[in-house]
Length: 375
Image (cartoon, rainbow, N blue to C red; front, side, top):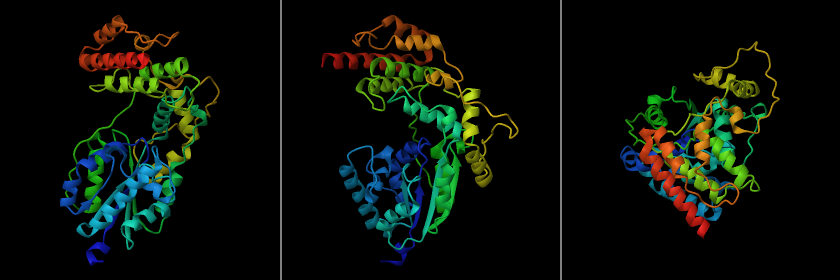
């Protein structure tokens, strides 16, 4: 082992989920050659998934075939181990690292370099209210149900403390995943600035954006679809619901179709009330901006009420737009595809700046539905 190899410093981007990891990992993947020229290594089998597969080496599970993913993991480790003599920084990036015991993840690091001494950890986190909204949206992609705001607890500070207390970790950088807090309002630009600080190199990463957020109206329509077309498949994605999600994502290619989803005041207050220790820790321990909260002397908000509809947590929903989106769906009784041209024209007329994306997305969705029905 050369002296150069033994001085390799690792940078672990550990997540959190729903905090721009896919954008960061896509950018790292396409910027590998530029990074390598600066003696910084990054390897990944799948651009938007980063090093998610590496946890299979410590008994973890993935979203796909774990045997295949383990093969990818071993291949990534082998590539990095063989090339580490040509670099003094190695980046690993996976949103599932943050909740794992640090020692388990560091055991993967040692598969690449047994003598590693310095590890820098980078984590992006959301305000609990923003994370709750993101997870509620994710939940209704495979269910009609989501956790009520008063029951939501996510002690992410405990995971971060474990990383900070690990004797093998030299530093932990925690950044708020919020447009107003990120460098240039972009997570890739922000991560680039973090890398420049940690490596003392003029790192330049290619732009990448993997924003798959739905509008408030699309969320309401998706929950309606789940309840009327596949209610028996709670917690499971179905081909029909996946096609609908793809429709909405394609419609949003140029700009969001509908209202940007935001929590209403009561839902936000309940989430903050249940996660106030997390908010205080992130604000006081890491000085994160944007951690505003209800006054300490505010009266407790009772959690009661009907929180079964996703609309119940949203600040604003344009019901006429929801009605138009519902008319794009299959017939509610038979499930047979329908092509409501009047609804499509009304939708286009209401959003003339998004004509191409909406028209192409809806017609592709209708073709897919007809093919599925015929099959």
